[in-house]
Image (tube, rainbow, N blue to C red; front, side, top):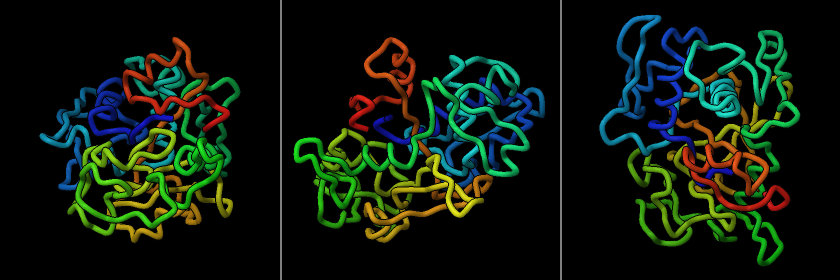
Length: 264
């Protein structure tokens, strides 16, 4: 699983590769707002995208569940450049169809190498401590509630309860990694996962910059309409197998928390 959430810089690279026309609305105009990080220039067919100064390492937000699947498909297909279609964003790790979106039935394809974590994969990366062979209550390697604070090397802290005043650069809480080596699985932005909840919703985990610490706990689950795009929601990507030359792409683009599948 990636060590950090997908950033504005990484998502802008994706947009510049596949969203010259952007028929699937991978770009949300709110990304250019104060809490976003990406602007768009040009007209349909020749759009280009820039990262706002100082916001490249902050997590991308205003992304839907389907935006995250299309990003995973782009990775699966080798980061191609071209129009949105089966060879770029609409097939690969996931086959995205109007019917599948309408009935919320899209699932990971067999053999996918890059994908959105399942609820269980996300949960184990955040809370499982292999040394004690037990699950912790909070994602920064502790059973004690996470402390909401500004970024630092202080253990068991996170960007929550508006303590940092906005989104922070991914990985800024250097003393608060999970036992798996991930950062920000508590706070900053909620993260989409593959779970289907209540029939029409998809899973979210981890709380956001605004959340009370209790929302970061292992016991807390949340969900949203998969088409919705919020300032408090982003995502991270996972991959199998490890280690492999097939992971060089994801390692270079996102960074990986290096545990084998059985530990994640």
